[in-house]
Length: 425
Image: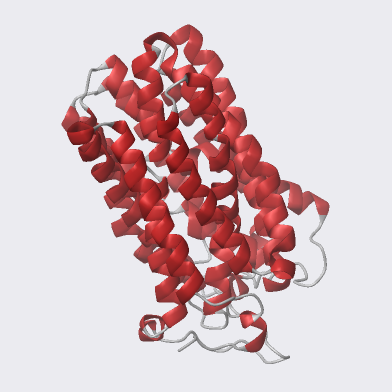
């Protein structure tokens, strides 16, 4: 099918056979280098503003929420753009360069309005990465190999996060919290090189948007956007994503703040230790989730993620000892590893054949951003009013509610893509 860009028709690899080793390694490198860039400054920014510039927790929560809101607003239109464009690699490059510029500028302009503006830029640029990476992956491997490849993507993503967090922690011990900006900028620049190692001709842009061949039939036409609003399973999943990230997003920044207040000189290094510990757990969890999602089903694995998140929120207040807090953070590796690997799979399951995979992924990522932004803002207010323990217990209660919702309202979606090419009613 013509790409609409005037370029020769792409020659994708087979969607049923394993992809060539060189292409697999290119995807590995892309996910590894984009890992730190996708997640942004996050909890590191909260420590930097708290320790270096003496910001209060409510202001920190607000400025972090601004970046989250920017991502929320941008995600759905960016997803629609990813569906339509054949320049998916160019979108990744532009996003990475914007994140690099923002990271280098933030330490130079640490006042509230400048940081807010740069967080706004980072949020918009960061909205590109999730749908573009998922689209490129689906366009390269096809739906039959998507689960295993997404698990591998997430494993390299977490390995990249662990490596950069370890480097950040070591450098921060000698040079202070400012090094987090340098490391982020360096990884963003490397991700540009990694993006260009994935050949454009390897991507089937029709398959990348969910218009793959079904039962020997040719590509159809994308369904209307209204069909997504009537997709009950997609809407329920969006609600559970909001709840998951409302419960999850603020936990690590709050732990980082507690560690920094008790250990002012090495707060950033301890935060890096938390991230490394969790990311090292996420690597095998994500790989196992991708490998077994088609065998065990999505639902039971996702419920484990919610249960672990609930327990994690309840354990943080037990003790403010640094070793305890870092140890509990290992549980983040289980919950986040499961979510990262299953998130695009469930979206692909319930939108298969609609041609709206990436805009749906963008919309659900918008839900993700809503939950994360609210989490940081609300948790900051709770800490200011009632302390850290109250914030952790509140987040644990929200996670428990998410477990119940997914258990009762969300069906098993594994195999849906093989049964229907239409949006679910």
